Amino acid sequence: MRFGYWTPLFGGWLRNVDNEHMPVTFDYVKRLAQRAERIGFDLTLVPELNLNDIKGTAAPSLEAWALAAAIAATTERLEIMAAMRPGYHLPAVTAKQAATIDDISCGRFTFNVVSAWWAEEAKQYGGIFSEHDDRYKRTAEFVEVMKGLWRETPYSFHGEYYDIENSHLEPKPRVTPRIYAGGESEAGKAAITGYADAYVTHGGTVEELRTKIAEMKQRRVDAGLPPFEAGRASRRPGRGRRASVVFRRPGTRLCPSDERHRSGGQRSRRGRSRAPSSACGPRRPGRPARRARAGWTRQRLGYRPGRPSGAGRLRSTIVRAPKACRTRRRAASRCR
Image (cartoon, rainbow, N blue to C red; front, side, top):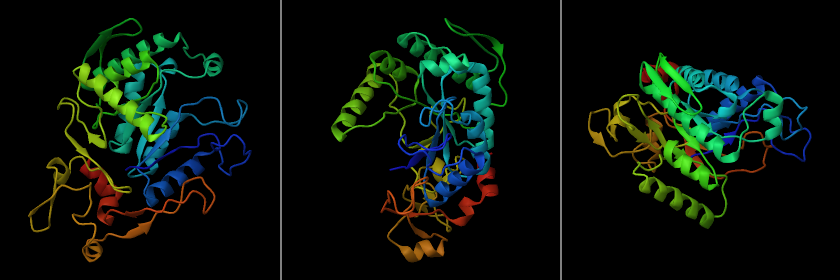
């Protein structure tokens, strides 16, 4: 299980509380991200909302992609999932921005593609807000152009919505950003089946989620496509769809070029092979003495970012990665 949180880019998420003590500033967002990273959160979703739909349209709101790049520069392990709506972007420029943030984050940048939402915002900001099914068709072309630019140089595309001729995008992303997408309509599910790498949903009961997941899995099978991804993948352009998949404990960092992860297992100091495990994780979590010698610490996860002290406590215990794996300089060098 991986834990994430929504970045409060406009002062919180509660409609019935005027002041949640979450300033609409990058300084607050940065401190929140760094603390969330320290206590074991795996990812943050940065929503793209030019208007504040929680506190009111006249209230302040930060821009999502500039914020995602800043979070990438001031954190070390968090996966940074930025929402993106094609009606407000050009695919080639967005592909370039994503490649840049990928470099800043050392391969931790991913997308949550949202076909469209909120007509009033589109009206105020000049976004494209066409008929429902048409928005999903546009999104499918948008993602196809981005993936093509990440994969090929030069790249050309001639579609209904976008026209790209001999485009060059360099540098390519070192880790191809994963595309998350969700939708409940038939048009949405059909489009997501074709272009998304991972399926997201707002949730529901266990039975409702089981039904949704089973349906989307079957759609991928019927389309002749590989299953939706789970965990965090290291995917390199031009080297096939997947290089390796690592399921991480909260608080550990993915090191795509680390031999332990490429081989699916770990190697001890004496060179002996160990059983596959989570990234940078110990072979046997039940051996505290061995973990202590390796520099591991045990930490109680009892804090939820942005919530008052003592509220919404999580009682699970996490194990943090060795200090060497948390060092920014070494982590960055492993991603080269």
